[in-house]
Image: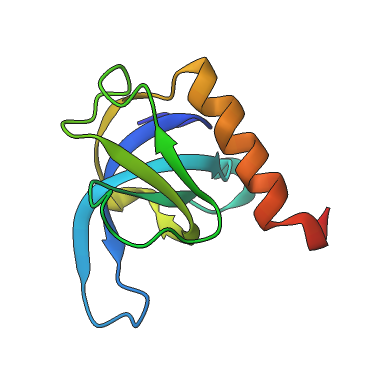
Length: 115
């Protein structure tokens, strides 16, 4: 399965304490090329719990339906993981152009100290 930035995938995403994982949608931030000897993908969590307290880097996805999501959703850049591609269940869709721009702005804000 070929993956690229801006794609939404369904993946086994680990809890932050690593006690378990949950199948959930996630945004592909980058995929590590297999010729580098790795089969990993860096993803950011997507949640449908839009009533939860906002975290730095949260982006309300305006085009959630067009992205293949079932419910209004929020991209959560505070929860990023590097995972093996074998954990991807399937591809759901792609972010809309508008949501890509909102996500890029949020990435710059969250990781400003590194840019």
